[in-house]
Length: 70
Length: 191
Image 1 (cartoon, rainbow over the protein chains, first blue to last red):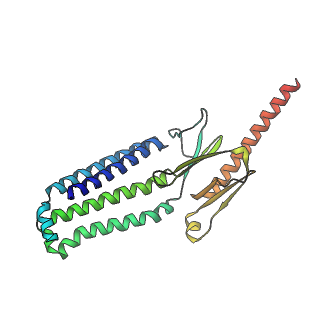
Image 2 (image 1 turned 90 degrees about the vertical axis):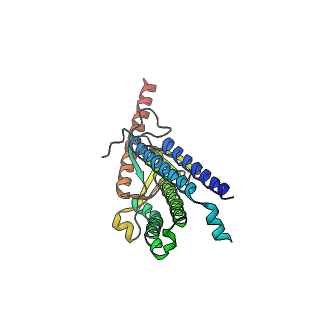
Image 3 (image 1 turned 120 degrees about the vertical axis):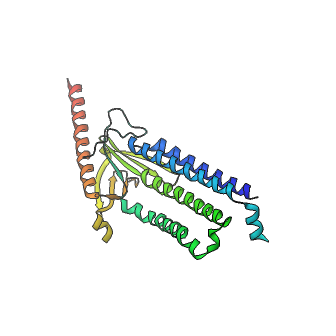
């Protein structure tokens, strides 16, 4: 259940990020700002996603859920 | 004046030069960014003070869970920041030597592009209303055409009086150019 919810969250994050990258690359009128914004967005988004995955898989969900739900 | 040679937009004609690219005034985005700043403040102060207040958050597995939640919040803020930025940065008025192009972006999936030739301009009005707009010199520029379309409103733009002057100057140039072209055509027919 938690894994499914997490998958939906990650999918929504990736989809929104994709559309943001699409807008930045397609509709930017200034070449320099396009490169700066794209690199900044991709780097930070990837960093946040990577750290989120690491944190998610380092949590012992069985201990947490038993503690909260029981 | 800023050089716009490196700027390019979809539908730009050959020989068409960008004279001015106008975005909304930075104060307009600041109003929306206040929510982002507030969320950032909430996130950082939570990361610092919540483990002090609730010591259980300092021990495993709750501390991992706490940082995971902070990370999810950071991801949300990051996406939210860029959605505001896209709404601001892609909402743009491009003044070229031939026309005005208005690109309106609302969110990610609502984008409209309209244009107007300088020859159609009848009157341009700049309007600065309020204490903050007067202090920071930003406001609206209305363009009236013969057809009275409401499409051309420069909303909350910096230095509206300068923009008005530029538009009037370009309009005069365009009218002179069209008159000269018409005269040439008539002279050619008479010969």
